[in-house]
Length: 263
Image (cartoon, rainbow, N blue to C red; front, side, top):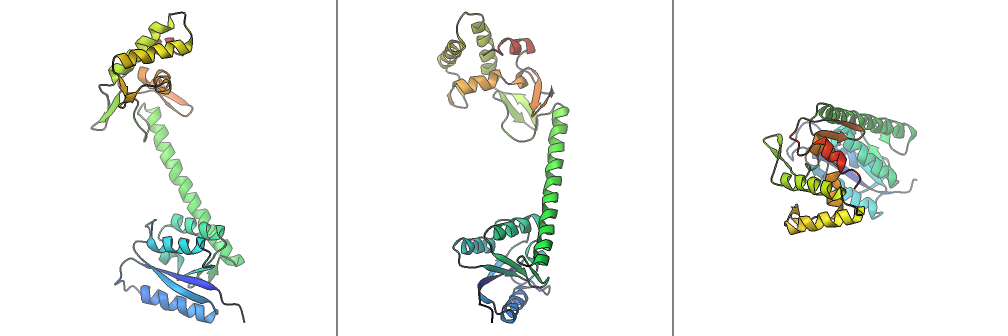
């Protein structure tokens, strides 16, 4: 007789009253019957009542806790498509169990992650999810690059200091005058025979004297450097290796920008 192992059953329905032939009672009975036939001790049936596309599910969280405590070495589900409506979520869960050397068994499909055939099928499913993820990333990247090439600001992230978003449009705000001051003052300091460090120190003192703040805080060397090195202010948008003219308001001339690039 095979040694009995500690396992948990994992079942999911969208609603407690689900009656499509794969409800809680149905899945639970099938998993328990499987345990009896295979001489597997099923310590607990863990239930998720939620959409199969929800990522942070209580049932999966509970299973992960038991796995990390070393309490279980098998997780039994009725059917992969029943429990996971998202191939990506299945892939993440499968990889997690595999990493912790915990067996995943799908009763209705007759698959075990510890068997050659089951490992192959689960691996193919994970590969499909990876392919889907890459396609999504490519589409997102394509959209971002297109926006950049059209001169639009890239998706995500904070706008440059001195700009705000107003009704979907990039506009200048009250901080734009500070940006202009920084470029103008640094241009003046570039004409003096002083070191780069001294120029920056004098600029910071001037900013403090005028009580100019960087998002509510005193300016520092990095804040100033980031502003002076940003081509967005004279009309160019940089994204990775791409630099192209943009369609948004500019604050300085390209000549002024170039004059202060030895900071």
